[in-house]
Length: 212
Ligand code: ACO
Image (cartoon, rainbow, N blue to C red; front, side):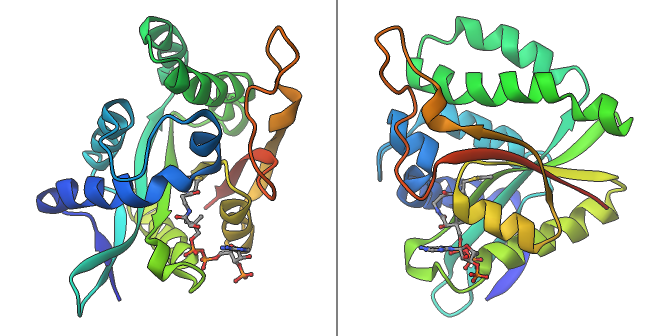
């Protein structure tokens, strides 16, 4: 495998990879925002915007030319979360609001910018490994490569919204600590039904961070 920064020429191939492989993400699977193999315009706009920060990394299988995995990394700036909370009110897709509403609310309350006195944070936003390449340590290596990029760009802190237990294990193995842990099943609608019916072993969403 060859690791490197995702070049602009491969943005569309990364989106194709994500269409097939990212719908397994537990929060998405629980609310049904994206379906395997189908375009998912709202999430893909978020993916493209993140790749345009130029700090995303990929693992490419040299033999087949297939994308084995990606970490889409973006710059989060102080004040953006407040704006995102406002903007999401005008999004009429309920699944998108459920996912990003939760992430935005938790991050707004946590306010890592004030806690660590920084104006920008290196954020691992989307982590995805091709189903045929999972369990081989590719996600761990994508985290390690992302840290190198973060350091080269002068960041003091990295963070990730780890919605999957597997990402939590990867992050922990790379020296991240838990800033906040949320139990998905604590969120209920007015009829007492679970809003995020995530399947075991994915019972928590953890905001995880590392000072670098
Ligand atoms: N069963 C049990 N444990 C697992 C499994 C599995 N199927 N897959 C990974 N793990 C755990 C292992 O503990 C492993 O650590 P260990 O080998 O030291 O025990 C750890 O996760 C890391 O394993 P990797 O091989 O590095 O992970 P992989 O390359 O398979 O990628 C990923 C993990 C990215 C989560 C992959 O399963 C995936 O693409 N899932 C669908 C999308 C998704 O959920 N993405 C993460 C959402 S959070 C975010 O994007 C920031």
